[in-house]
Image 1 (cartoon, rainbow, N blue to C red):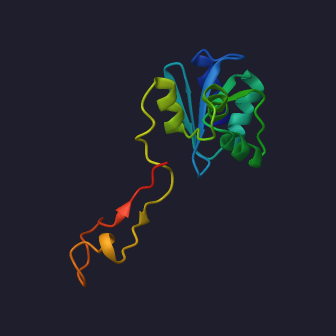
Image 2 (cartoon, rainbow, N blue to C red; image 1 turned 90 degrees about the horizontal axis):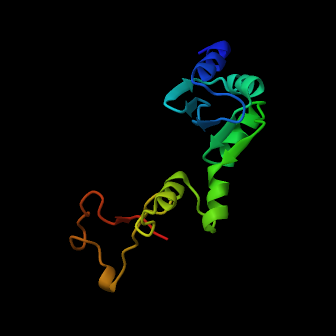
Image 3 (cartoon, one colour; image 1 turned 120 degrees about the vertical axis):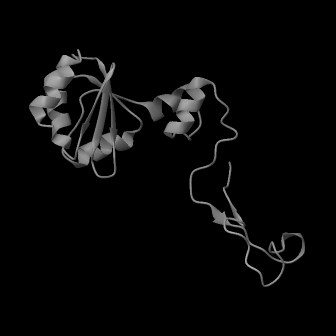
Length: 151
C-alpha cells in the first residue's frame, strides 16, 4: 500500500486528529492498523506510519513501548500514543503487562491459570520419588518430562 493510500484509507474510515488508531508491529516491521470497523496492513514501510501521523495526528494505541521503539529505530516518532502495557501497570500495579495478561485483567478473567512466559524446561530426574517415567533405560513418551513454569 502506498503512503497516499494509507492516509486516504484512514481518512475514508473517518480518522481525524485525536482519533484512536490501533497499531501493531511484527518482527519483520510489518504493520497492522485498525480504526473503527476498518483494518489495514502495511508491509515493511514504517515511514508510511510517520506520514499518516504527520498528516492526520491520530492517537495511536500500542500494546507496549516496544512498538514505538521499533518505529523510532526506523526513524519514525509518533506525536501521541497510548501504551496499553503502561496503562495496565498504572491501573492494576505489578510489572507483568503482556497483551494476554492485560486483556484478561481488563475483561475480569482469571489470570492465575495463565502460563508464564518462556519455554518449557525439562524436569530433572534423580533418585527417589522423581524417577524417570517408564523405568530405567527406557525413554519417556514424547512430551513427558516437560513442564511449563507458572508464576
